[in-house]
Image (tube, rainbow, N blue to C red; front, top):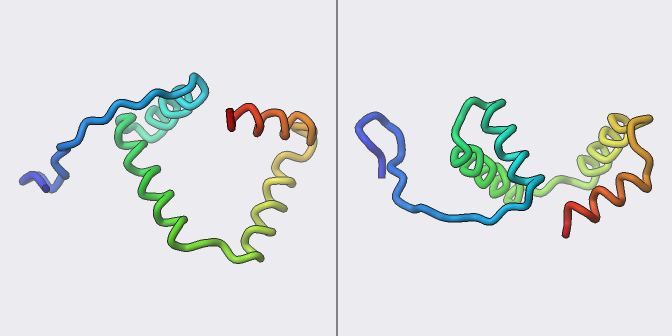
Length: 90
């Protein structure tokens, strides 16, 4: 449903339990984008859905991995990266 001002009417309220890191990320994005936390969630869900429907090619995945490696060069060790990823998955 859409209001007369063109904005969608929010009809569903949902409660989430987030870990501290995710909650901080959500707040930082909301501040950076100058929107509500709910808008960050809406945009993120939309982006995730779009990326699911348009999978990356093997070449795109390799390029992204190379870019990530280049961006992280000298900033973090492989061991620290693995620990951080494992921690984030818990």
